[in-house]
Length: 104
Image 1 (cartoon, rainbow, N blue to C red):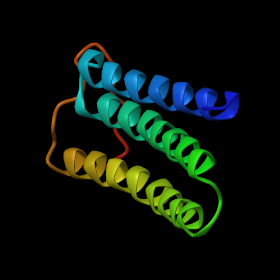
Image 2: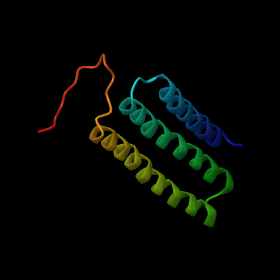
Image 3: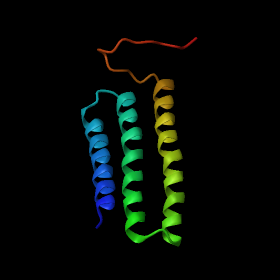
Image 4: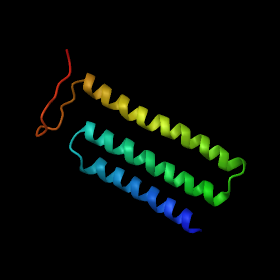
């Protein structure tokens, strides 16, 4: 394992760990969705780049780049939809946070 692969693996694992920690520590669904979408996107991309660097940039490496593209688009989209549905269902926000309601 080269230094670049090790760095990308540790970076990816760090982001995945922080996303998991955010899921456990944040108080409401909106904060949790934000933590998961940001951290997991970068964590999975880091791990996939480490794997692509390890196996080489031939046919499988190109497939991993396509997978990264789809992960980069679908993970934030799912987090956004989760927050939107929670907002539409009037799921309560954290009670100590000031509410800035933009409904008309």
